[in-house]
Length: 502
Image (tube, rainbow, N blue to C red; front, top):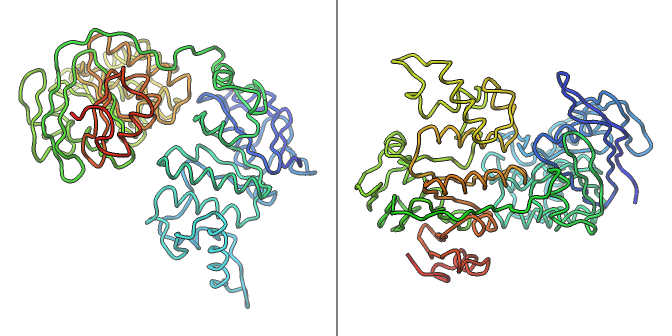
């Protein structure tokens, strides 16, 4: 196969910190080449060098038979390289057609934009991606994340891209959209497009990739055909050690009921939910997108107070009308989107960890910076946050370490009940194992944990019991001993199909 792009002994540093060291990498026409590594391994820097965003300090970039010391974004596009970033670079107020051909529009007589040709070509590109349902005149801001992603891919193809870089393309997609995207990727491969695929999700890698390259701490660990590796091999290559227990569920003493929910409802999203949560217990909440899992958490935490039903905390009836009230009752909530809802990313670790419990570091109306820093140092040590210190800005941390800071912020409130919504979304396998170990430790110390997750292995691996939601209702309650992918999956897709209804 033709090599479309090749990097030769590429190195890059930022502020004296070496993030890539003598890395060799290539991608061939008609293959999916997966790029793996923990957060901070150098993946983003590598793909930005290929896309012309960063210039390497040393090394060479080969595009076909051309050789470069560095690329500009214009040169990368001219060389047939397009990038679909996790944060899609589209203009919401422009139409699908306008976004696809922005900066690359066909022109007719008198150099005027040829709108008819643009719409026709946009339609052809979307049809080639199995997207006949997408209206070429719709504003992009009205589209789902999955459809916006298809627009981004069509935009790349409109520029005759021979190499498409996909950075965590399924991070925000529902399962059905993931399947559809994978079908699109396979179609592109059949057409001879070279694809560089960056993802933390190993099942996707084995379903799509022809080869896989692993980076660790900026160094190339190896490039292997996918047929020659296993998940365990890749995990060991990424983290530098075997992870024997991705789901280190320690046996914890299950105590008395700490949270009792009866007939809880909120609009059409949460309907007549009843369950108990006990000290030392991890209860998983499973369900398809739209099942009402996050809405249940928001209702318990007082963000969307219940319309009806009752809640008891530690044996006392309560009516939770706000997050502050929930916090004061001993309930903590680690939200699904840590970047937008869980952290203030331009602020430091110390400032973030003190945010939910300022009374612990304040004297009157003044915050003790010494106490705040000491509290952050303790959180860093206890949770294993990899950081320079309490004054480091949270935005500079990897996804896994940011998640630990969110967790640390809420643990400072000394909660009885911890609600975790998608606790390991978007973080690498090593950090996932560490978050799971922290959850297990907290449960062993007597904390009650309600864990919402879209990852079935996580739900099965970490839960003492599983609540399965469907259409806003509780479809089943399944004990750990009875939980299998089949029983949970059946309950997720058909209400009441598995387990014992709560």
